[in-house]
Length: 433
Image 1 (cartoon, rainbow, N blue to C red):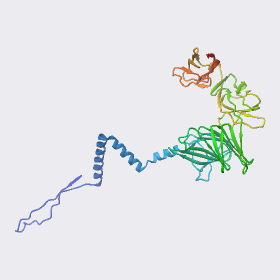
Image 2 (tube, one colour):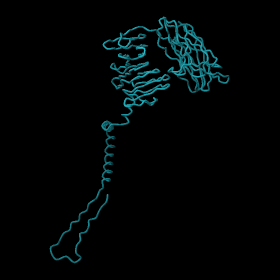
Image 3 (cartoon, rainbow, N blue to C red):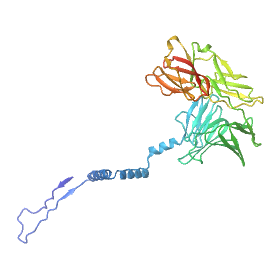
Image 4 (cartoon, one colour):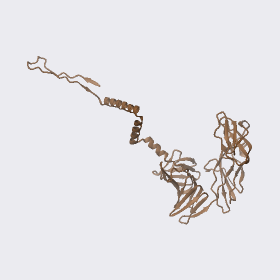
């Protein structure tokens, strides 16, 4: 702020002529710049807002929210858009994507988001798993081309859908947020709408004119024109293009027994070790196919064995992590879906790689067994196929088994440490009647 003195008016040097006396008025003013006005206005506004917050804090929150909503928050908008987009959670081999507004195919990665109209294509060595914001997962098998047909995810409902142009897709739904939600997959002129907590497999083979929808768990409704068919667990529909729809039952997949899920297999010479695989029998099955792969998408198999019984021995595996599952087949050459997938790790056991594992005598608590023991800090333990979650920093642990039937049981405890060392103990217990 500046102050300016009034300019003296010019007057002659000579004495004024006689006449009436003239009275002078002196005027003073202040010149204020725009910058100064803005600074002072801002200070006054800050003082007012601070006073409001001190007296009524909720007023400030309400005003801030309204201003933010009115202006819009780009970062919040982007975050919301990202949360409602589908994403890749597993990629194996070659997988390509063509966006709806593009003519170019690009390699998919874990940062790729998917919107309505996008195309996904897998090569002969490729597979992908995509997840939508509502928890629905679509597993795209090798040599498959699909289109994202729907992706609406709001607070009130969620609707997701893909179309199989060629190939195979597995999908699994979780619990829906509302009754109006749905997850769908289309093939040829049919669409399967899965209910919540359901799993299904859908195949489209234009060359063989073979189209089928199989429900592995839960239920689904298949709509083909005016025809609606309800499917439950282990049921399928199949149809040729332009032909009738056939509904039938399918074989159930086997339940897996050994190796236990997430369990280490210990051997001094892994490549020559004989690994025992075992599963439960399926009614009506006369044969089984075992698959072993280093990837959970089974795009590369290290073993594929066909057997007539419910167990087999496998050799020739190098040390490492492996995934395995089994399918069943009957006399009509119908094949079940593959079972759930188990993982095991094959370790090289050396004399210097042993790990500490001490277990007290189990305590029977109702139909469960309580195991208390100590292992090395940072080690991992699996008891009867269950990972021990609570291992203290000093290695002590306490674990309750799942409820067991009355009678004698063998509890298997398997451990592995960060050095590659492993340990295994078997404990016999009796659950009273």
